[in-house]
Image (cartoon, rainbow, N blue to C red; front, side, top):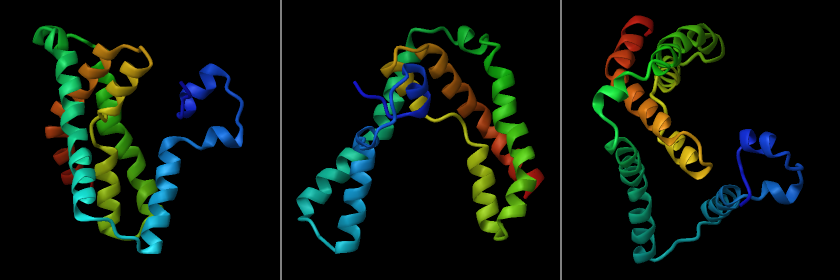
Length: 164
């Protein structure tokens, strides 16, 4: 299977060739741009089917994370000490360091706020998906997604209240 992330490429020593840049995501993006600018419309049943598939992605990712966490005791989730400093750095330190840089480059307060909140967001579900796909530590990835999501209930309002 071809890999489409820079981290996987550097580990596997794949040569950078133009044909390797044509991943399914890039091809889909190019098609979407062509469809958008050409004004092509599709029948409602096709649009509805695509929306249904798209609406399934988040619940399916949550099911995968839940399945990864199901066999772990709650005590073991909270006893993974490596997650705590990472979470603190990811959700508190990084937004504080990035805020002056954001303000320097972005003048609109709304866009500043959105950018800052995005930086303070928890780890994405894709971490578990990539860990599963590339035989990584799925359990640690699931724990990290869970813990950062749990802590974001406190850290995001803290970042917004303190910096904005």
